[in-house]
Image (cartoon, rainbow, N blue to C red):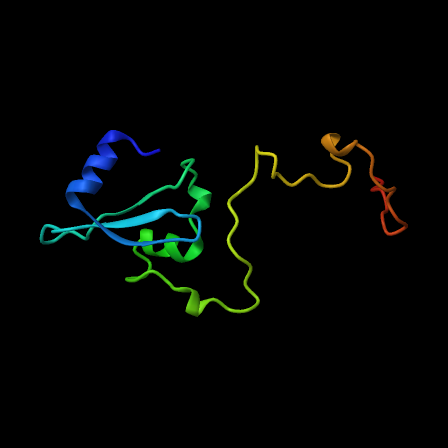
Length: 116
């Protein structure tokens, strides 16, 4: 949840630009003073986690593009955005990880130990 100051600033000076598939809302500053570019920010839907911002909105937030990229630019081979799951139950655990039993398959014949 955003702080009171952020919500107040958004209510007074923000203009909604759009939302992403996760429900995050993206704003731009109304009435930007001359000689300064408009501020851009996001109000997260749920936990504030920077990795929850998809690439098309990340580019817009950081003034890389003037308008947010739309799904019409998405290629068929691109996967949908996923937030970083480290530290959560969605974290990747490779084979042999302690939390997956600590056992993994033995190395195959292509491994050769280094000898000084």
